[in-house]
Image 1 (cartoon, one colour):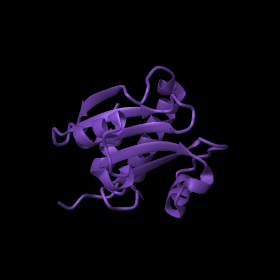
Image 2 (cartoon, one colour; image 1 turned 60 degrees about the vertical axis):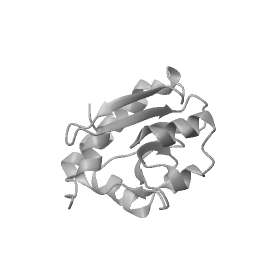
Image 3 (cartoon, rainbow, N blue to C red; image 1 turned 90 degrees about the vertical axis):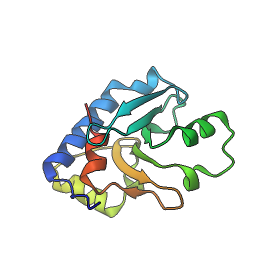
Image 4 (cartoon, rainbow, N blue to C red; image 1 turned 120 degrees about the vertical axis):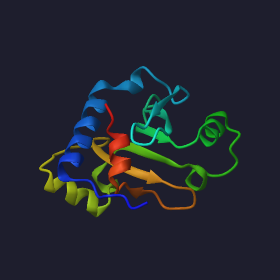
Length: 147
């Protein structure tokens, strides 16, 4: 299926959703082991969400496509490095130097400004066996920015 590229307005909406998520500081109320499902209104798929940040090292949200890998990672039963087994969309708040040049360009084009460590939102697609890559299609962006 060919996915359309997101518009500037859709990207703006995703960055606004990320800013609201960061401001809410959900990691102060949830631990990585608290998992909840969200239905994608576009196709009915369920994404299993995990809020990261309670440990104070990594801040963000992961939306997993499949519960088995997530539960295996959380229980410690998953023997495979998550880089090679997880399939998810991830919002992370990183340092500027962790972003791809295309992400920095997009932030500049949207007129957004961030400052400091754990301040720069990055939106990545993790697929088993592939390097995490910035999301590029409208469906992933829409699912990640749902209210």
